[in-house]
Image 1 (cartoon, one colour):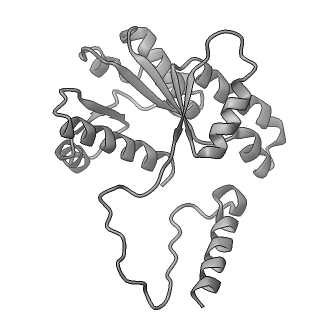
Image 2 (cartoon, helix red, strand yellow):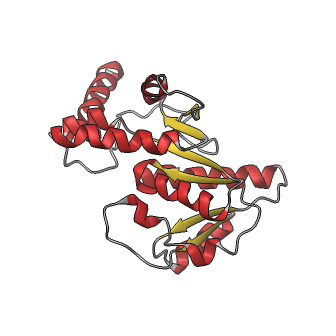
Length: 220
């Protein structure tokens, strides 16, 4: 779930677009130590997994910048580099500046640090995390905000920028269009929550429980 799911589904969607439009563009995803089976499975779906040259344990996302120098230097005509939040956003920007100056940088904005850090009780780091997230977004050409609430939050945060800022677009996650819906209603509802459950409010377990309760009452 989370970041990995968004990145995976985005790559697969881009590959499907290329296949349907008979486009010649490639979809490449740089991964840390991908399994051989994963590389084969991704290639069948039109996505090339590129193993990283090394793994760093440094918490600073800037150290990810040069992990993939050997593989990236061989690519040609790269039109876009996508990074996800602070985790790979700064790396995407540096990759563009180092290898592909004509490429566009797309940054995925998937959380509001002010809310998340405060919910975790990390009062001191909230401002620092927010500053870093906005630094990533400001340096990008396009910003994809996950969901309408984050889209509004990001546009509000960027409204005071002097000069040209990124183009903000809504990334509305959901079910793939090839998923077949149920044609008959089940007798008893079953609810599945996939994700970590260590922090109730941060992970949305309270919202999940509330929604499940509403559906159960509706079913009755």
